[in-house]
Image (tube, rainbow, N blue to C red):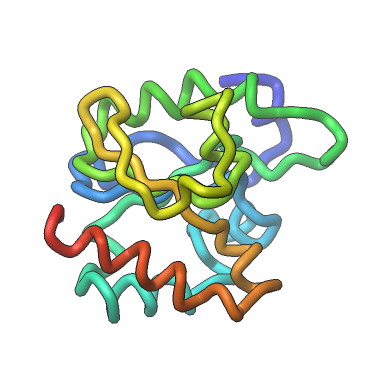
Length: 160
């Protein structure tokens, strides 16, 4: 692993839920997630929403991160250190659908494209369908966009 993993209590690995049809990719774990070793530890409402919309329990989809450890220094771009791990994880998991949460994550897959105007669109990425949408943190700050997020997720019903 890379230098960012030093001192991390519970780093996120690429071994669990190795055959998920659906993979959500968030930017980086929060401090609470890293300390507990559990994705969405401080965002349980997200798992409830996924169950209500797609009927999937938490063990039926995978949550991953572009940056695998909570970065202590947010002024440094840590994406380059972890991107190869994310793409290896995708190759191992072989998800049918990848949902990128936020513009930072979307640019990890399509560096020269912007989330605006393409959010909610189904794109091809290697052997998966990729759908960019809002980040969970952004939705917490902008709850008026929750309906748009729900509409994005509804597009996945027929695919999964």
